[in-house]
Figure 1 (cartoon, helix red, strand yellow):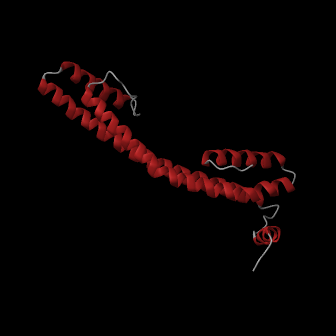
Figure 2 (tube, rainbow, N blue to C red):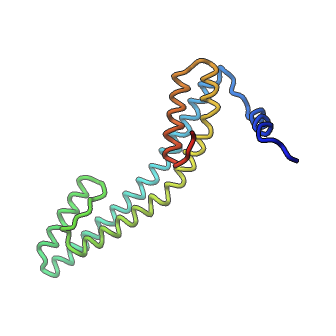
Figure 3 (spheres, rainbow, N blue to C red):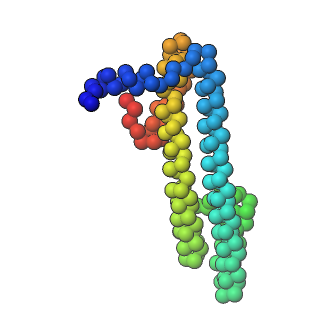
Length: 172
């Protein structure tokens, strides 16, 4: 069956349930809440695994301190100890430091590689969620425009633009 693109578009639009005027804001709020909860779940799982990764790195630094102590390497021992204490104070990934002893630099390279693997694991899940939201927002933008709620419609359009940019999609 050959259907023109215009007729197909009309058929698709009639198949999409139209938002009722009074329920649009309630449904939009539910969409926002559901999205926020899912993002929080993803971020929490990511941060938990990231913390576990940092904890393993800190334990490896303790072992490296012992190696430096056994070798009589005061500079290596002090560097490892200071980095460990810094990480325990501010639980965040350290910066790259060309002044770090070679063994610690190698440990840092491994740490950053594992962090990048974590990002690679979680990013597709976040992208999928963002793509779902991006597509779900269009009917709300249209409905709020119909209702004359321009601030909400503009807010949604701006959000859709940001999501499209984040996803690398052209929504012009």
